[in-house]
Amino acid sequence: MTKMTFLRVAAAAFLAQCSALALALDPLSYARYDQVKTSALHMDLKADFAKKTLSGFAELSLDWLDKSARTLDLDTRDLSISKVEAQDAKGAWKTVPYTLGKRDAEKGQAMHVKLPGQPQKVRIHYRTAPTATALQWLSPVQTMSGKRPYMFSQSQNIEARSWVPLQDTPAVRFTYTARIEAPDDLRVVMSADNDPKATGKGGWRFTMPQPIPSYLLAIAIGEIDARTLGPRTGVYAEPKRIEAAAYELADTEKTLAAAESLYGPYRWGRYDMLVLPPSFPIGGMENPRLTFLTPTMIAGDRSLVDLIAHELAHSWSGNLVTNASWKHWWLNEGFTTYVTTRILEKIYGEEVATMNLQLEQEEALTSLAEIAPAKQALITKHPDSSSQHYTDDALAYPKGAWFLRTLEQRAGREVFDPFLRGWFDQHAFQSVTTEQFVSYLRKNLLEKHPKVLSEAELEEWLYGPGIPASATRAMSQRLAALNATRDAWLKGQVKTAQLDTKNWNATEWMKFLNDIDEKANAAQLKELDQAFKLSTTGNNEVAFRFYRASVNAGYRDIRPALESFLMSVGRQKFVVPLYTALRKNPQDNAWAESVYKKARERYHPATQKSVDKQMASKSKS
Image (cartoon, rainbow, N blue to C red; front, side, top):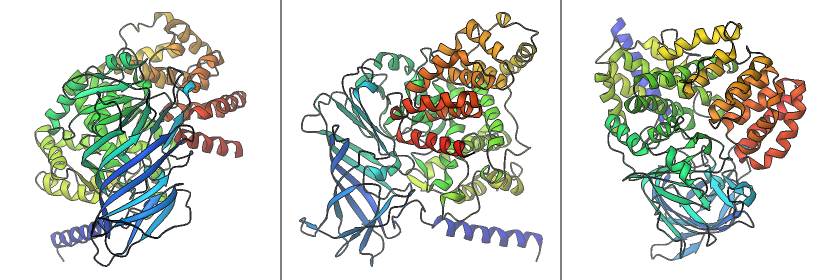
């Protein structure tokens, strides 16, 4: 066998294996979507804040793929099912039997609906639990006005099943409509078409005409005001936060136009945003038509709007082209992180984009020390049979972006940009696998430009640990100039009062604080605080890094400010590392536990789960 023949045979075998892998069902879902798929969802629900429940019915429109199938398998978690109905050929609803499987800690419960035939529609009447993992019910004291309660959802990754019985997998996409009843003085918004002038009389009504996966289902109810930002953009927030939010997000229309110039038309109608209460557990959630945002991005100076660029980028990478299962997470987040940098460059220039990119890459390299080598790959070769084989969620963002940037740098933008846009266009409103991307990559880039990336390098990027040695690191001249200042300050050669920070932007402060973490002593951190009021800065990204460095240095004068931060901010990116730092030192451990006891009820269930696990593991060590 010649070398060329061997390579052809190997490639054919690889593609056959890829095809088999692509057919694997999502291991985190009980749904048999190879037999029947949901094509549309209608929800008719009533919100009860006293009981902390949503109740009503979900109606699923079904597309039967297997003519012999007579069972509809759905995902649920802690739902109280009262009745299931199927619509017969004459349109009448008839009760049908169902069973619930054994509860699994990760997946919830399978719901098996036994059907006499293959009905086009099935209705499940149900009520959510007060402890639904996707929903956080806030008391009035946890809101800005202190007068009315608030509720919001976070369905990613597999939490939608805790508030809707459905096929909870990114492999299934569906359109949806909804009618939601809520108290008269509260507004309901969803990841759908939101009408700022709606009154809610007769229920709040929504339509999502584009097919989405279940993790993008989203709802919020509370005292919510609205402001228009541009022809296609707007922002919703609590009345006391709406003006600050509108100011911070004023460039959103410009950001949307920049993204379109790079990757084609925005296909979701409007791009609105909802700024949530501080307990929202993540920076942003890319729910189509209504991105959910943490208020921690409101710095007062628009210095953290890269978060908006990231969530907007998901309108192409993630929402438009979606990972088929959570094994392929990097296809969502790695692509989005790459696109974010391109959008930032388009709006704010190359230097700003490079500064952000360098910080991102440096933090990725630092994180490797805390991640097992097997988890550092973009994806593993294990069959998609268990989440135990999935790689590190956080590293997928910068490593995936770094991989795409490597392709861009070697191919040149005149080649790479049409290639990437073609990926989005050809797979629009589809759920895809890494194997599909590799096939597209080979056919549309590597076969035409074989010197861009060797097979060995491709293997290393996808399946190898860490960042390949061949990767080019971003270098910002402004950040490079900061290194000498940092080193001189750490050595005491430059006094704190001599630091010329008047022209530093937020990224420079973040890099400086990252670099001095675990190197500066308590006295130096105290001087920084006195000189620049870092413990009370309105920029939460800067404040977090200062708190972390202070804890690691043993600077405990910041405890009142740190406690206030931990009591008022529920973003996991900030909360979990700060508790981790506090738990390292016995002198801080007891204090950390006392703060968490008070703060825990203010956090979203996802944040509670992360910190609970951390506290339990640390206490055993």
